[in-house]
Length: 224
Image 1 (tube, rainbow, N blue to C red):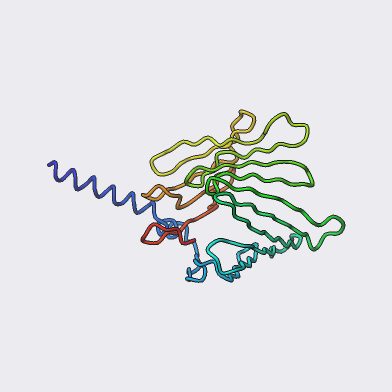
Image 2 (cartoon, helix red, strand yellow):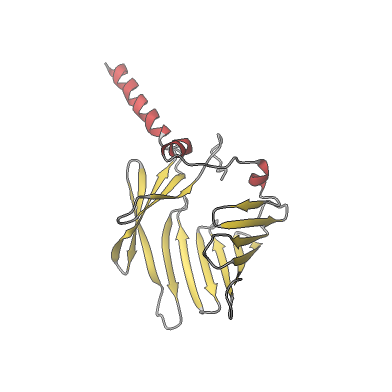
């Protein structure tokens, strides 16, 4: 009897683990994903087109040197953005210049980013507004904090995200000024090795939609 119970328990464990794979979410939500080439994994002289952006990666290095992005969505101002990366130990500085092509007058925008803790902490500064934005993420990439400080502010203000772990997912709910905002609930589904495989946004009066899907190889390395 004990052996029979153990077999049933193992069956349910295996079935649960199947639901935490990329293939499960691709099949369940009928997602169409591109084939991954070695060129994409190397991030080498790559041009990538998504529904909204065209990306142009430069330099044959393990780390990104620069990215040029062109907004391609219809009905929106044409936007050209260039990001340049500089590395100093475990700190990364990014200078981001954005130009709205279809607008007149002041069409440029500059943002300087600083990343630390293996990209888990982000500081952003916009000279035009003299404001500082700070975001932080845990080791999985789940957002914990999204706040800003502008001239006249005595401290940072913004959103804090409270996490609750369930059997199948981690739920993150935004708190703004101490009040819960149920419009922005995120659900992160994890792989058996505790990494995000799918990221869903749940909003009021709308169907949940997928924000991010990570696909892994057999060595548990994220492919895209």
